[in-house]
Amino acid sequence: NAGVMQNPRHLVRRRGQEARLRCSPMKGHSHVYWYRQLPEEGLKFMVYLQKENIIDESGMPKERFSAEFPKEGPSILRIQQVVRGDSAAYFCASSRPERETQYFGPGTRLLVL
Amino acid sequence: AQTVTQSQPEMSVQEAETVTLSCTYDTSESNYYLFWYKQPPSRQMILVIRQEAYKQQNATENRFSVNFQKAAKSFSLKISDSQLGDTAMYFCAFMKPLQEYGNKLVFGAGTILRVKS
Image (cartoon, rainbow over all chains, first blue to last red):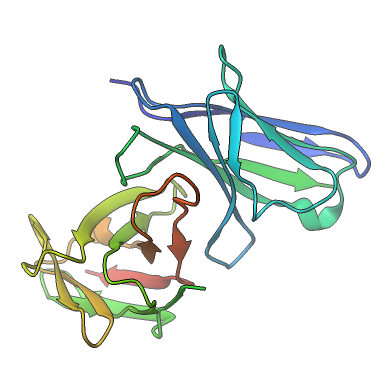
């Protein structure tokens, strides 16, 4: 029973480039959450998606960041024109409908040079 | 807005000893969920234990147990018979009741636990 999968595990980008982070939820899970962990800090909620719908994006920066969870395929967190302050670990979590427990993927470490 | 406070940035414990990590939270909700997650050096987030606020019985998972004091809004984690593999960052997290919008986890800043041999 595969857990939440994220790729890539490590991503290096230069300032101004785009970063695309992928998340495949656990089997049977249709709810996906993205969190960001800045160095030496706790995790901060970014966005909550269900299939083809963004339910809560209250934690997403207003510019450059977007997320999607299409009917087929993984959820994508996209960061356009990355800046050094975007360097962080980005975690995806998934849950079943009507279940509160979220299971996390291994994270993607983004480094912006 | 809900807040979660972990007042101990770092803790250490001898192998086989018992250690308690503190967590307090602030909410006006009467029902909610509380979690402890562990983040070892691999940085993977691992669920340790969960508690439903309407259940008075403290949750237990093997060597891990919680002391849930609803009136005091306190949710401490006790690790018995500490093992070297317990060395990790531990995060306390809060979630409002399941609803159509906003099932997000609110995390504390974390406590680094070091188990010494």
